[in-house]
Length: 301
Image 1 (cartoon, rainbow, N blue to C red):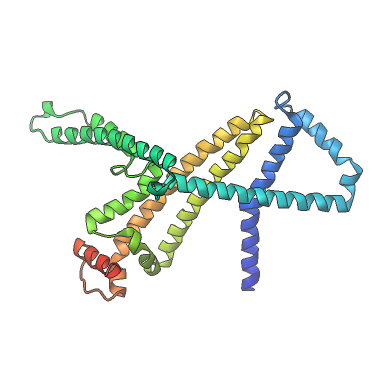
Image 2 (spheres, rainbow, N blue to C red):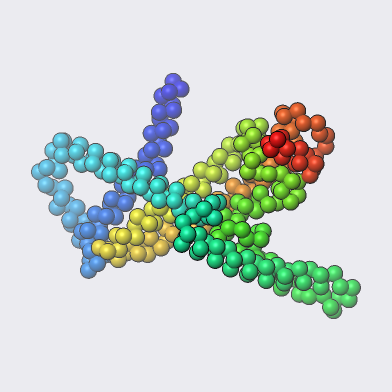
């Protein structure tokens, strides 16, 4: 019973993540080859071609239909795996956790991006701090328009929520959770997380796992965008299609990264004391810098 239910879930996952998007891609490939640039949006021409193919004697035979179905399923699954591979690469580039170990040309580009983003962030942060100080002036006439500070703060957050250390917003959003925990409570998130994840309540762990899966799916969407781009050689509508996929993927990656980082940070703040109790660390009260130091020494004897 359990194995049957597990097999059913795996089959559903295989169908939704690999086969269906791959089958759609194959349909677009067929349309691209059939219509070309000249008749790119001629739906009637495409339907006529499909109808002509369907009356072929080989298409009516059971053996031919089975062969076609198997070929489509295999091709769709292979394309799905290719999109996942490209998605994994896109995720690594977007999160950029190890950008300092990238090959020299790519590392130089990333370093330049970090420096540029850090400079812009520092300029906007200076504006925010000046406006905050001016808001405390005793005379109401000397106080600034709060909208100036809010606009600068918003533009700063569009670059990064903390001083940039990675070449992308998404990478810095993950890094920001670690920076805040270290600054506020001396918690080393990256070394602490494997142990902390084991003591989290099931609902919290499920939420975090779900957010992480959403991020992976969003990155896979970027992988599909990469696969659609080469079809522009035969069919120009592939260009806007790839662009739309890229923009949607970017939006979804940002939103899922933000949700995932927020959940991880909140879980660490709330449940670090639970981990301390499990490790028999003598501590009473809420999470503090002292407890963070004790947990750090526990992981770095």
